[in-house]
Amino acid sequence: MVKTNKEIRRKQREEVIQKLYEIDINDGVNETEIKDPYVKTSVEGVLSHRDFIDRKIQDNLTNWSLSRLTYIDRAIIRFATYEMVYSQLPSEIIINEALVLTRKYSDEGNDKMVGFTNKVLDNIHHAIK
Image (tube, rainbow, N blue to C red; front, side, top):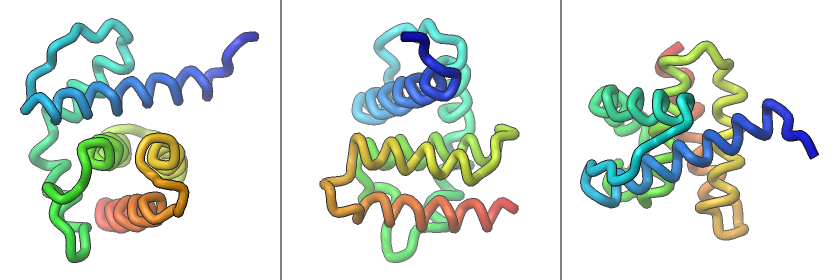
């Protein structure tokens, strides 16, 4: 079965999230080489703009701090914020992809984290418009 571009890109996004998670959990140390050009560029982009991205996220969290987010939620929100600021992709698609990843990796079946992530990313989208 041939994968569609959408399926390939989703898999690449998962790799970006996994890499950002790994780097965050290892205090910024990147222990493995990244071969896929899209994944490598995305991870390097998030890391090089991390201070700006983290400020944007923190400014749009209500009654939360960035440090309270789990590693995986932080990775998902950081990457989505990076894409909203530095890519030409519509924010609606970026947010939807982030929610798919949240559902897969973070949500416990009650949609609480999906709702939380959606709200934060929607706030960020409106802040950068």
